[in-house]
Length: 388
Image 1 (cartoon, helix red, strand yellow):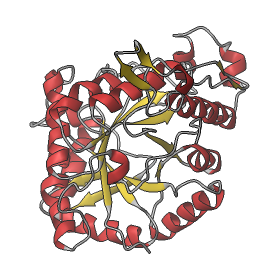
Image 2 (cartoon, one colour):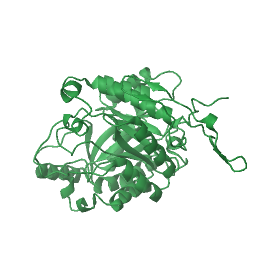
Image 3 (cartoon, rainbow, N blue to C red):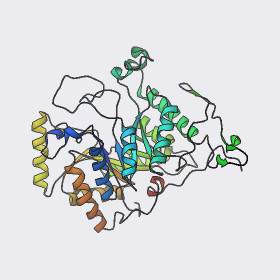
Image 4 (cartoon, rainbow, N blue to C red):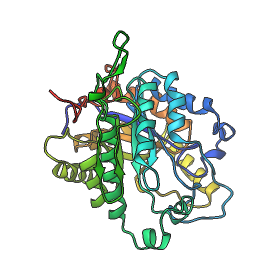
């Protein structure tokens, strides 16, 4: 059991996580490609004093099957780049963390490292990244650098996650490749940087060979937050070795305890504990009957019952608060809630759930830290290359 308050985040994806969410009366499907849409969602989350938002992304169009293609036209298709959404929203917010998804299969860590470092500067220390792998053969064909049959049809998830561990290690080394005081701007001597405080990272691995240093000075947080989603042993190992925040998908308090203990046992000595967030999809309303009716209506429109890798909760904000407190007592640091529809369920979280938890003394009353690391209770790490 933890005496800490509950941490809350929301996962933003299109018009919501239910495939028929775009057809709701208050949905804004025509605004999905506009900056105002995303700014409105994130500022609403900040009004609720949430820790951070995650923003979904991918390398293929959205399909019901994670590795397939379908011809449906009754689903949201197309999205903006998650990192660029976060960069656009950052100046319009002051406290909430911004954690876009970065697909690390097929992409280069050097590019993502400087993008997230830049986001950390734009947000003044509120950036993170959720690293995600892709086993989708259709995504592979966008890049043409892998033989699909060899790399995906026979490749295991473990191999992709091992690649993600190396990728994350490169990110972290590049963020450290400039010492905090490397930029000196000394006009009399004509020296803008102290070259002795820029470092080659000299990473050599099975998938990457990266010399460094980065072209972007060390971010304000030193190390922006790295997050990952895990469903089983291999992905839990990625969370334990490489992430600051782990998103997990237990189905009950007892399972929450088991997952938290597994991740803690795999954590290397000397690293700060992983902040474990349990994911739940939420259908919320003022009454339980209304929440159930909303889900039934959405399922009928979609033509199929909604299912998820995560627990699906249907009920009132107060009932959800009961569940979150039970799972929190079982070991979860916090919760990443996936709103079934936007903006309805987001507003239920910010105007209903957060005040209810606050009334119970289980959630913050203000933002007391200036960085996402501070909000999560994580220290600013020392630079691995800095000399005494």
